[in-house]
Figure 1 (cartoon, rainbow, N blue to C red):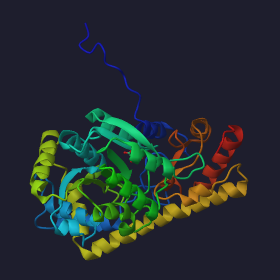
Figure 2 (tube, rainbow, N blue to C red):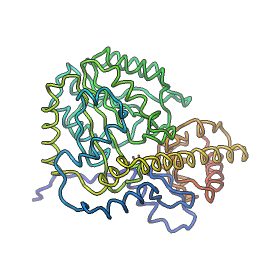
Figure 3 (spheres, helix red, strand yellow):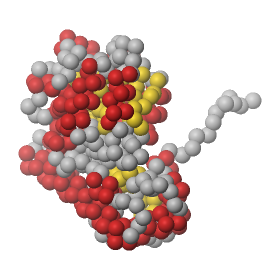
Figure 4 (cartoon, helix red, strand yellow):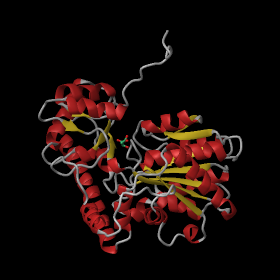
Length: 412
Ligand code: LMR
């Protein structure tokens, strides 16, 4: 008799499964618009100049070693990461309201935050209810469902490719008091559509009015506008207007420092009540100690080297502009090529969306044909990682999209 009589084989992860199919494809002109990872204009992974210089400086330092980090993480990294997201002059930092814990990148931060809130939140009837945008990053669902939350969604994306602002606000107002709202801090994944500043103010005020807990996922700071400060607007507005509810921030340096595989991230829990910050820190420590003991050291030391050296910090900001402006120029080229081809539909949304992705409006059937007939890979939802485009492939991708749109007619 099997000891695993009920075990089920699960389908491949939508994003990593796509990557595996792309890797196995031997067609020389294949194009990867799947996983959100920056590529340079030659289609190659890009080690940021700031990172290269920081690695050299770090490795030449007399204190360089591979010892364990403490459970909270590498202090120069954790403390400066909080300044990156909250602002160096943040009153919440000065007042000791912020508890920061190093994590395994953004996914680890989301998981630690989820476990922490599930165990400790006593915010009201909604304390085990968590709301995700519809649509959202696929991994959000399984991270929070696996922890035990009742996962619901708030409307976000309308057929006409605009924000469902009214639906979003209505859900905030009708959710049980004390629910958790997972918010994409900027560069919404997958839609590339962010609320305006005025909309953020209304949304966050409604969240606080209803006693809910905002949980920010900040994976793309610097990718929406090219500016770290501008892309932190939603978070800094929330923190400046915080009431009794905690604010949780999950911060990844995977994309904005190009440290994908090094798993560099933090969770920050902000509490108005400084009497409980020690308790929060110890609870976060316990989760990390029992799950991974301590976070990986190398990537956090590289990022800390950047954050503590003014010249490297400037270089990093420049690198962010390099990445975000190349992506923007590819948005324009793709849109212009589709227009020039007379491809049915309006493609302006490709330029208007921000961050790494475009929610193209292509149907699952059209995406499947792109992969099969044209070796162009994107997620079945129609999300395309614009960072995978370059001067050498953008025209061909436009021609491929043109062909599938004419062949498989659906609403765009
Ligand atoms: C993505 O959405 O493509 C990235 O966040 C990579 C990932 O881990 O899914």
